[in-house]
Length: 374
Ligand SMILES: NC(=O)CC[C@H](N)C(=O)O
Image 1: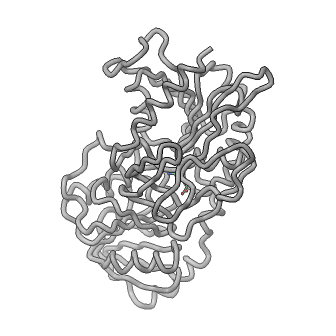
Image 2 (image 1 turned 135 degrees about the vertical axis):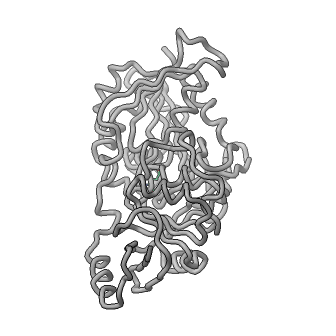
Image 3 (image 1 turned 45 degrees about the horizontal axis):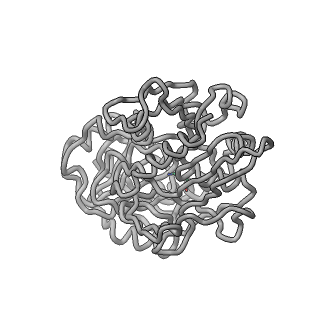
């Protein structure tokens, strides 16, 4: 199959097509993970984006359902150097996603690093894509909206409540009877986040992104976790309004988009990074302990350092560029003078894919919920 990748700046890159025969638009981003193409493709946070991998061989170890981070591929298209298995080709076909291979992904990555993320078009076709057609495709890119103008969370969040029962095998410090209950606000959650909680004997009530604070409190959870999700956090106004009402009433935590939504709910600001952090080797420093973790990341927006609300602290920073990787306030007083913590991280403690260095954060969440239970 033929394929072409066209960038916003007019660069035309021809290669071979795989996956579905299709034409897609999206924000072109790069991911530096050496493994994990299945997890990356099925991570709902990649909705609206075409992903290129810096690692040159993709498909080496096939495709297994147990690695899926959700039911579907959410990335709009896939750009790789070498395609090394039919399974990856079939996987993209099955989900109607186009791919291009045989292209210089190092060149593409350097371009994104110098120019920032770029709107792009990926077209795969059984027929040769003629020179005359290119101008028309470039025009489609210029007419396509910026990711900050596209509301994506409603497209990937659950539309109904889902209950995930705790699993007992790794039961640590409480029994099934009084398992910790978490309401998970689903902005496009990865399944490994749910697994990290249920494996720790936590009951997870997954609710749509636009669930009201009252509906959440009626579930009588021990804590709330706001999930990861695609696009610009400023567009997720309903969730921001809900979070504002939850702070101080129970412990509130967040991961990635959850960190950004918490920042906005607290009156802070977020901004778009030039080319984002996507990969499995992002060094993060915990400012409380001085420890450094290798983390898994996938984000294009970040908390503005200067805008951290009064009383809140930066909990983590990224050692590559000093950006904020987490905020916290360990006690927030509510009207009954009960003190409830708020904390969130910009990185992905669940990994999926990536190093498990920060998985202990889920233990910390459960410990915190136990401490504040009742
Ligand atoms: N993984 C996420 O939750 C990503 C959050 C947000 N969409 C960003 O790109 O920054």
